[in-house]
Amino acid sequence: MLRTLLISFVVAVSLNAQQFGKVQLWDVMENGKTQKIKGSLEFSAGAVSFSGKKDVAFDYAEIDKFVYERTATPRYKAGLLFAWPLLFTKGKKHFLTVHAAGDSYAVFRLHKSSYRMILTVAEAKSGHAVEREEER
Image (cartoon, rainbow, N blue to C red; front, side):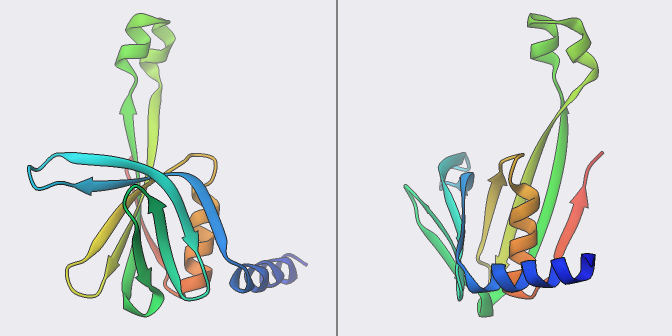
C-alpha cells in the first residue's frame, strides 16, 4: 500500500512542473559579501531554475549532485530580549546546494515548511540522490 502510494507520487511529480516559493538564492558578490535574493525554485521536466532578481537554471544532465545541509544556531537575542527559556532553543536553517558541471554551483536557503518536499522532488526529477549533511 505505502509502496503503491510512493510510486504514484513519483510518477505524478515527474509529469508536472513543481514550483516552490519562499526560497533564497545566496549569491557571493565580488567583494566577498553574500547577497540573499528572494524568489521561487522550479523543478520542470528538463531543468531546475530559480526566478528572482537574478535567474539561475541548471539542466538535469549537467547537475553532478545535490547537497542538503541543516544548521542550528542558538537563539541568544530572542532569549535575552523576550523570554529566557528561548536561550535553550535553536533556530534551524535548511540549505540545498546544486553542484553542476565544471565549477558552477548555487546555494539555496529553503523554507522550513517546504524543504522536505523540495528534497523529494529534486531526487525524483533529477535521478540523483540528495546527500545529507546535518549539523546537530
